[in-house]
Length: 269
Image (cartoon, rainbow, N blue to C red; front, side, top):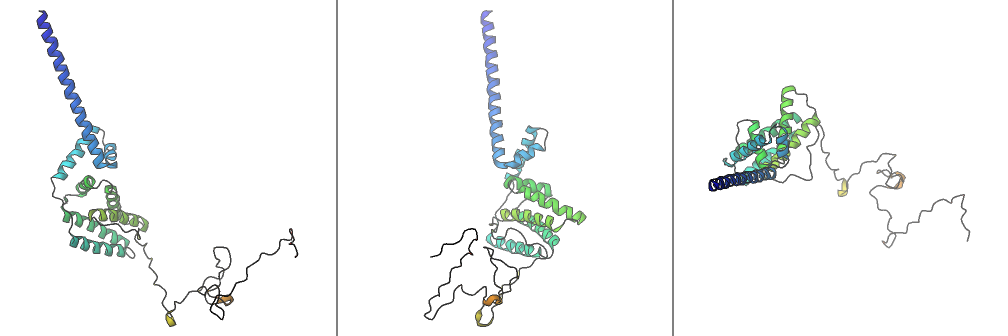
């Protein structure tokens, strides 16, 4: 009787230990999978969880997206394809100057064509954005915002130029990521509609640049009035500070002295 009780107790302890071990292993696997998802999705991990009432369910959906992405044959663009898409993107950006809505339409179309060329699924926008989220979580929100603005404009046509500009900038961020091309640093935004770059002043006789007159009330950094470019006060803005003397050396310029303060008479020497 005593031996049977001992055996039962030992078996129970063994089962409890086995159960605890399996639970600990599952927890470790869960924590590892959670860490991998956080590392892969970055801020999108928290955003995805906020939209779900069950953390485990949301994490399983994210894991399923990763599995689906790994089954796709996504390829990089060739140099020729990058050049071709880059040319079309430059044309869309230039078009924004006079036709902002059409330029945003072009950007949406171009993004879709780049994704199709690389092998992303073309089922619908939700599927495309999910796959972008897996590969490029840092820019998928740009894609969502741009697409939302584009759809609102198509539905109502009431987006102003600034909203269209922001949408275009979102598309541009994604375009350079998808084409693996550097985003320009010198030009951070498409030019506002109706704005054109003025050409540089043409050279006059003798190869000298023609200068435009300054306003009569123009002042310099120190507060002093700037002479008119046409020669007011016998000077020009492009003239040297001091003219050369007979031997070619610059003549001395008399220093400017402040008027004496009546409260502090100057000493006479």
